[in-house]
Image 1 (cartoon, rainbow, N blue to C red):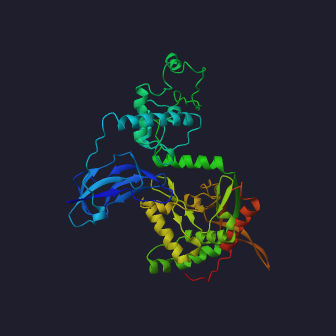
Image 2 (cartoon, rainbow, N blue to C red):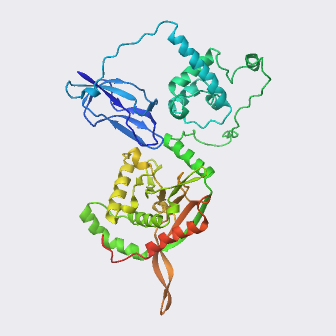
Image 3 (cartoon, rainbow, N blue to C red):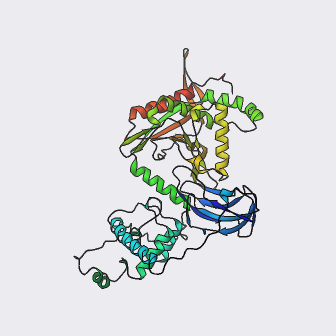
Length: 450
C-alpha cells in the first residue's frame, strides 16, 4: 500500500492559512476521489477540502480549530499500490535524534533571545494581528489579557501567533522566564529592580453594561462570520469618508420589457431572468465610462483596476451577507450576465462558493429593495471606493410631461443610493456616475432582444 499526503490547497492570492472547523471523515473511513474530507474557514469563506485520490483515511495531522498554512499536510490517505505517481508517495522517515545537550540547548538559546527581542517590540505598539480561534481559546484558558497576548512573539505568516508560539509563551511564563502582567506588584518590581519604576496601564475598555435592572435573556455569542463582518464594517467606517448621493429612476419601460421576455428566457435557458443582471450591466457600463470609480486606495496611493469585477451582495440562510464577484462583468452579454448571477446566487445560498469567487471585487452592488427598503446608505467594501444600493421598485403616481400638456400617470420607480469614498471621489464624479446608471435604465430599448 502507498500513502498520499492531502495538503491544504491554494485558495486565492491573499489567503495564506485557514482554520480547520470540522472533519467529515474519521480515521479508517473509506474516501472516494473528489469526496470532501474536512471543512475549513478563511477570513473570507467556509469551504470543503476534497481528496484527490481514493483510499482510506490513515492519519489526521490537525485537530478542529487549529490553524493550517497553505501547503501543509492535513491528512494522510492510504491508497492501493500503482495508483499514485512516484512523486506523490511518502518515503519512509528515519527519526533524527540530536546529540544530547547540543542542538537542543543551542535552539533554546536562540528561541529565548528571539522571544525577548520580539516581546519588547510588540509591547510598544498596538496589536493588529489576527488570532485563530484556537489561540484565543488557549489565551482565555491561561488568563492572558489582550495586552499580554500582544507580547507573544509570532512565527506564523505575517507574524501571526501559532499554537506552538502561545504554548511556548505560556510555559515560559509559568517558569518565570517572561514577566506576567498578572503578578503581584512586589513580585513584578523584583523582576525589574535594576530599572526605573514604570506604571503598566491596562488597555482602555468600554464600561461594562449593567443588565441587573433589565429582563434581558442570556447573551448570544456572535458567529465567526458575524465577527468578521462586524470588524470589516467598523474598519471601513473608520477608514473611508463616506458620502451618499441618491437619485430616483423611472424604470417603467424596463419593467415592461422584462415582463415580456422573462418567460421565453426561462423556457430557453431553464432558469429565471431577474432584474439583477440588468442592473449589473448598467453598473459595468458606468464603470467603463468612469474608470476612477473602478479603483482601490492603499494608504495615499490610488490603485486603478484594468478589470471590472462587480461584487454582488447575496443573503445567506442565517441572515448574513456574502459578496460573490462577477469577474470581467463588462465583457458579458445580458444572457451571460444572467447565468453568472443565478449561479453565484444559488451557490452562495448553499454555502458552495470557492474562496476565489469572493475576492478581487473592484465595486459592489447590494439590493436593499429585496427586503422592502426604498433606499439605503451602504458601507463601502474596503479597499474599494464605492457601493450602489438598489431600492425597491414601486408603482407611484407621477407627473408625465408631453407636448400636449402634463398629466398624472402610474409609473414604476426606484431609488439608487451611491455611497463613495470622499477622500478620492468628489461629489461631481459620484453624482455623474449614478446619473449615468439612471439614464441607462430610463432609456431602456423596449425592442431589445435577449
